[in-house]
Image 1 (cartoon, rainbow, N blue to C red):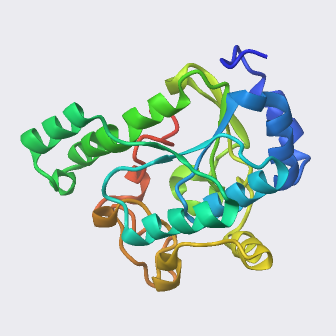
Image 2: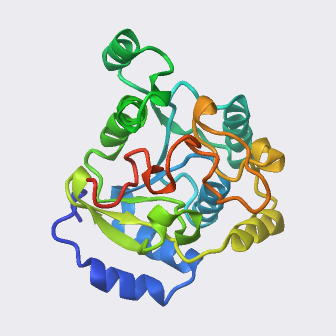
Length: 242
């Protein structure tokens, strides 16, 4: 099988994955895409579930981390803990130096507060461009996204075509999981988790763009909290934006 996908039958894939459990969906993806599959791990609760399922089924499967340079220290600590727990290293992609220096020169270090456009410009340099490098030559990539996380993800399928990255397949094996499902799995299997979750951070991104949330608030209300809910995507997962 070639690494680059060609006109995938996502409707058929969604029918197939809809009949499987999350572990079954991951097993199917490993068998279907082999070396063409990679996993984008952010080390949030959902991604730790996917990481654990992958390691149980195929230790050492391809995965990567987007290190924006502004992650929480707790996230870096979890990466180190996961390295020890699973006995592996994580491929890491960072912003291009020239692009980052230009961003800082032209806009300053905290320009993301100025407007949605300015915030997305920062995300483009720190996240979107590194993601493109991480996915180059792949046929499919996997995420820990769930429908219940945000209004922008309510219609999330198990599989979709990622036109922004050459038409490869994007797989969301936890799409139908609840928050309770996630935490039940983490506790049952002793999976390492980010210490920030115990301090009111259900969703964790870059340190200056993430805050704790109050009980009853939307799970992603602490991400870019100064923006409207329907705008809270960084460009990695914004459906309909490319």
